[in-house]
Image 1 (cartoon, helix red, strand yellow):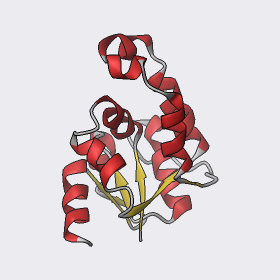
Image 2 (image 1 turned 45 degrees about the vertical axis):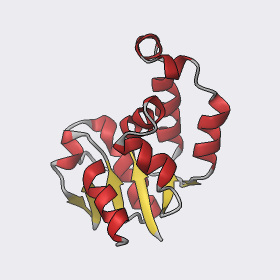
Image 3 (image 1 turned 90 degrees about the horizontal axis):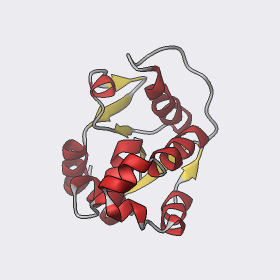
Image 4 (image 1 turned 30 degrees about the vertical axis):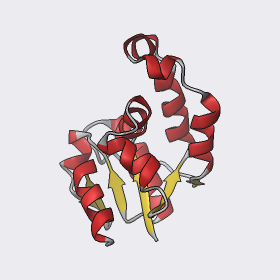
Length: 140
């Protein structure tokens, strides 16, 4: 089974619109891959979901049942991460790379340009949601 790390933006977008590409990855294709997370990713997801500007703009987040969020995250494998050197232009992105390395993941799925520009890191393919959905649909 494919080992995968998804970034916070994809997770949050899936909650805003479960029928979006991000939603399809998180909710409908989640049996096609093994999701890996780390404590820094979970912290960021929770912090982002509590931002007032997001809950004002997206009513679905305001009414979000945190038990559902915990259920989704609870299905993931949690890995212990270690600090890695500066890889991405944005230091905040390194937690996703560190998680993918610790998990020996095959893919890091993101819409973040700084990460996508890397294309690959230590054998981990860094791809966007469209490419990942195509990969899942082809059964690779």
